[in-house]
Length: 114
Length: 114
Image: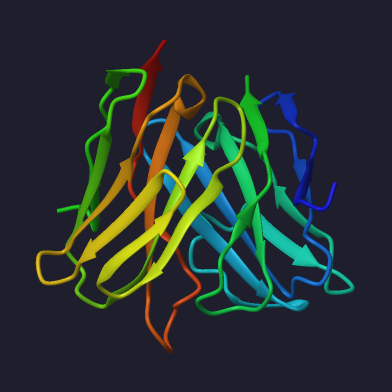
């Protein structure tokens, strides 16, 4: 199991609750990315980490979304006060370095907001 | 106009057929081109990774990039039922700038019938 690991695989929650999604990248990969995949929108970039810093947060849809990465490894994506439009699959990817390095994806967290 | 256009299909072919999947794009600054395969309820799996124009072959898969036409293709020879999946094209900028950010097509759903 040397791939990108995400948890939980599925999450169902009520509108207005906070959720936390976790990503464990491939060992040794310094760059980490979050994407969102929703019906009709395809895959959209959310945020990019190089080490523990996030030089690009431009894809986060609103200030209800935040992410952090600690120890240059595990990352968490937090969505506060969830809305129904947040329902989507949240995908994490990692690569050896930033820039034009091949990105490898986990299987995602399927988030459903009731 | 979307940055990356991809026919969503669905595309249905008999086993053994040659499959052609395509994307067009509008941003001439894209330099790196990828094809991902995504099985149902799984994450995207990197199939092909190419730089600039030209062809790249890997087993039954051939990727072609024509930058002058802003057109990329993926050919699958001797298609198998196990090739049934959604195929996503993706691309990124060259050196500098936000070259870590992948821009995806919406994917083409392929079914290979035994």
